[in-house]
Length: 446
Image 1 (spheres, rainbow, N blue to C red):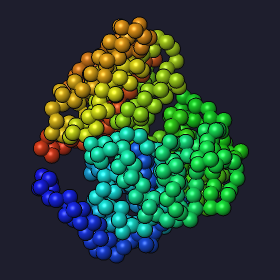
Image 2 (image 1 turned 30 degrees about the horizontal axis):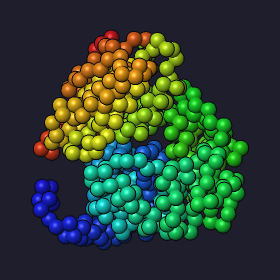
Image 3 (image 1 turned 180 degrees about the horizontal axis):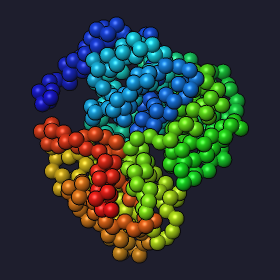
Image 4 (image 1 turned 90 degrees about the vertical axis):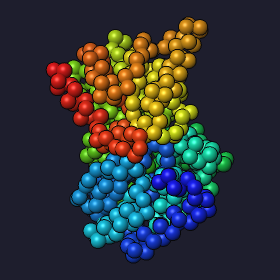
């Protein structure tokens, strides 16, 4: 609401905190009757929530979960159409109450930095806090990367029981400083050291336990890896999903689920909606992914380049935008640079402009592409980009990508994943689904 701009920060802070308490009070502090697992980080939260839910269900538990993708209470599922990863305080406490009433033992939830700023995590009795990774995001909102990290840390400060941490992330040391009864670490780095501690990944020291993925083998339909002599086959594209799987495995282990049960559960996962989701397989592939930060975008492009493109003659065609609303403007040219390095054809298009001028957003991204093209000309660099164009209408941009694709090529559409809305000016939302747009356009093309 615009009126919030005129409220002093300390009053706004008390407003959010009061709502959090009121929501918990109205619904009878439901988290006290659940084991609540909070997953935070820049990337991978939704995937970890989904995978952990499958593992705990395989172990025989009733679970509730919510992510940016969907809500789930036992067998009932429905899409998250809030355009909000972490619901407001009343919605959140009502969800937890419904989980209790449905007989769920666990609730697995995404915890965002914005949600923490607005105290949505308060008056929730967290059993477990999970840290996936951290890279720059929401910097304008928080004021600095350090403040963004501090916001994430508040979940770990509040949760005193179990902490699960990605030890390969450079920010792991910060999250390790928060006290907890038990700590679980995961990673793939063979030379990992934190605060001088040389870690033996098979050794349990006091309240610490570590797991490491070895023998990692990416394939065209997922990735295989070994944890303590147990072979896992996860049918999710991208090496980054090894980390997401390890986080989910740690959640299982922390709740007494053994590795064999975790393996059996993860084998059943065939994909996560809007996360490296293959929408069209032949004669060319069309993939939709939620990547909306430079780091995640580069990892997506690397996965496609290294795992899926079979020939030097095949092209990578990307459809790329960036969110408006004044958020993270710094990342737009960075994303343009990354697209120019990895993609043959780049189509810049609208994403979620909110109240910003969509053409200006595209110009911001274009600046990064032009920077790389100039470097290519001046320094004779070998870069992928052959051509780029701007098509403001996202549906037309997708159609253009389909028209450019030849057998064996890959189209990657990023930024929205499975989101059901496009957010426009004056608070308007237009129904949207990149995957459905692709299917309809492809059928017409045929």
